[in-house]
Image (cartoon, rainbow, N blue to C red; front, side, top):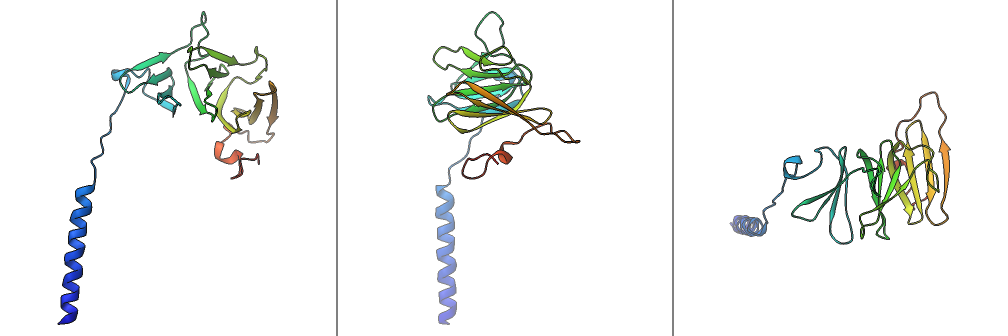
Length: 191
């Protein structure tokens, strides 16, 4: 009899806890944004949030900054200090507040968030990035950016010294993408 009372107590307490916990659960609201709401293109290739809280969405049709209400577009314009291409493959938000954007065929871009202008790194810039076809970018320090290219190539850009170094993977089966997760171990060292 005592065992039955104990079981009933545990069931009642469990039910009360269940109802109490479910009453504390908050509903989750998600918004969907497409080109109908102002996104430049529907295929997002990368997203990040800057120090000021702006959300940045890279697409195959340009770069988009979202302030929570509306989108501002950044597209290639040869007569301005614009992003170097509209098909953006990757983005990188460094600890020092720098925002970097890679393009599929026109090099690497550093955004000045105060002015909205871009510094472009490609075969014509100093430092020079000889392979402008960039698949991915990552970093293991604020001064070092690793740039993954097609054909098994990897570029190390040292932003402090203004130098680059190109590495190539030679194989009968050429690599098309250098994956971020494979570049660094847990200590952020190359390997």
